[in-house]
Length: 98
Image 1: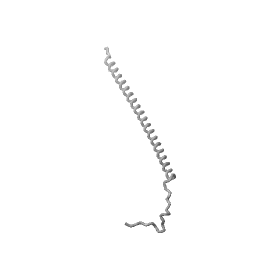
Image 2 (image 1 turned 90 degrees about the vertical axis):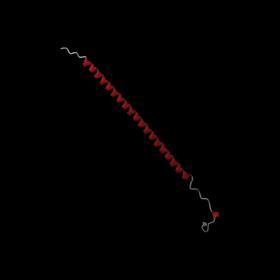
Image 3 (image 1 turned 45 degrees about the horizontal axis):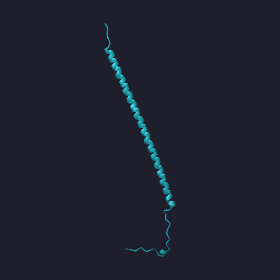
Image 4 (image 1 turned 30 degrees about the vertical axis):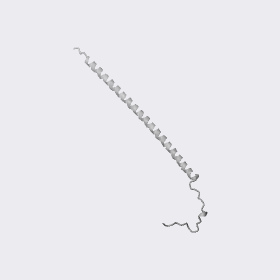
């Protein structure tokens, strides 16, 4: 195995620790980006909930409208049946005098 030696004129006793790249300045934008991301998620969630609520309200309104239409149609059919029954009874009771 080949040994890697330090460069010439390198004295390990003079090595000083290097400051970390990961300081408070480096973490603040990350936290800010996280905050912005969470804020956007909250806004998107609120919009989605509002859209679902609006859709549910619209569906309920549509269902109520359908029920009203069906009830009106049933009432009209009952009225037509009553008119037919009354007309048939009147036609059978006609007495023709000659």
